[in-house]
Image 1 (cartoon, one colour):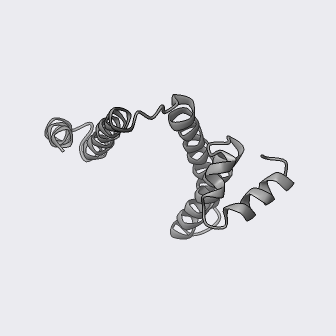
Image 2 (image 1 turned 180 degrees about the vertical axis):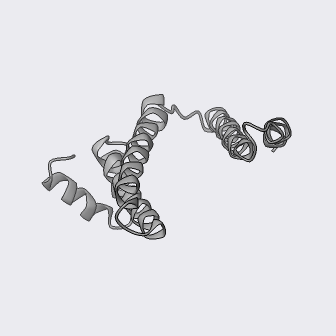
Length: 131
């Protein structure tokens, strides 16, 4: 919260940044909260969290989703109404992120099986030779 407050006070008054400073402050605040949570988890339950699995792969899936949804929105914008293009881009982003998470194997078979209908999902992924 302190990080967000300080960055808001610094960034928002800058004319070239303006209201975007609030968004930057929010992201920075969440990054700090994430880091504090991870450090507490590591200290409390002695868990080993791999950077590749918990940071790099999700960020890569997010970048893929962002790029694809941006292009989908850009293409649709000239064809259909802006609001409809936004809705379609958001829905496609959800699907693309889910596919990216599966293709990048962010979750292990055991983790997938813990999901509701996880055994069925695992069977489908095995038939598709993804897992």
